[in-house]
Image (cartoon, rainbow, N blue to C red; front, side, top):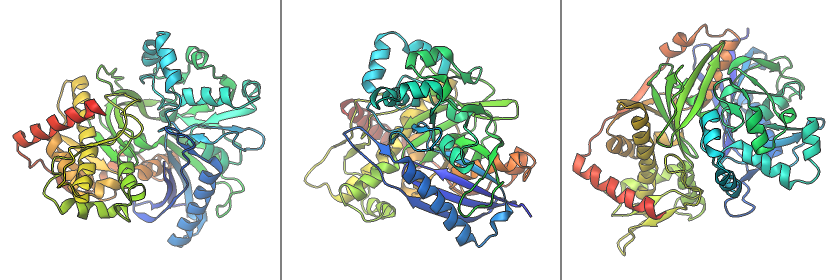
Length: 492
């Protein structure tokens, strides 16, 4: 009986594997972290082989922990850190350089050079994105320029490019499928967001040979089947792909225009479904493809903050303030407020709506009375303030106010953060029972493709709420918080 879906959520700091049954219950969840590499200030890399080894290990551990027969797996869904860029040898499958991670800022000079040439407007029009080191195209260009003797091979198609979804699908199918889906392709700066095809003019701007690019597919179809993977039988369809934030939107059952979610992971990402309408932002938001199912395309507005949970990791690993990330809530709760401390999490620049790659993190308002607890609380509040800036810009684009925001991701279990977020946004926050909505979204897309679920309505009917946070802070206090935040951001 083929009644289970295996979902791979390959994130920035680790890989999570979920096993989900037909009733959409999570039977097992296993997470493993993998190393981060920082060769120079502002550079962030992953070793692709370490990612693949971590993925294989996590799959095996999840199947073993769930005590299931892997022959029951009807399909595999993949969701992934999106803009992270890998180039590898088509014949050997060996990467030719470390993966350049979405957080990496090394291509800021190239972005500035292209802006000075007056190319930002055409890039924005064709892709819905801003010209920023965040996206894949300048990362590809950097590798082609800096790794010797590969440009000709890339032009022949012997060196291939992929975001993480492409790389994992390649590995799972033993090199048979070199594909990506529209949501990931829309994050490369190379796909025309209107016709959903690689754009010749964009390829010329970034000097990227089309021969090295994967085939663009929908978000829910069979791309290939497993072959020679330890712990998995051959022939399991790889059947769902979406970038992590689009997958979370799908996993939150935000299927209708106007519905929105915010995922609090390594970074934080606020997406609003705009349906078939392609909304061009005038406020620093990104226009992106949410998903494509069959012939139907859904778009979204997105605002991304590069650092969210990663700032808590910094307090844990860099400053050694806490031993486990989960300890920050109790520490922050031990004081009634931040004591005037403002924490701007701009470690790798500021994303939407500021788009300031040169910005850096900052802690201000320190006094002799400042304690670790005040810094911990300011850290959580800084995460929330970034979402305020994003939502204000998004509401300006749409011309209407959001009433409800669904939340998910690891940091959404932090009640102090969620309450403060509701307070300063002035909207209700709704947290689902299952906060692993990114992996669930990938599972749902795969399950639809292999017929485990018949339609999106069946998925929406199973969505369950855990807790709603309603605004409690008075408007005068909110305004004071926001003034202090705005002053700090200008200095970051």
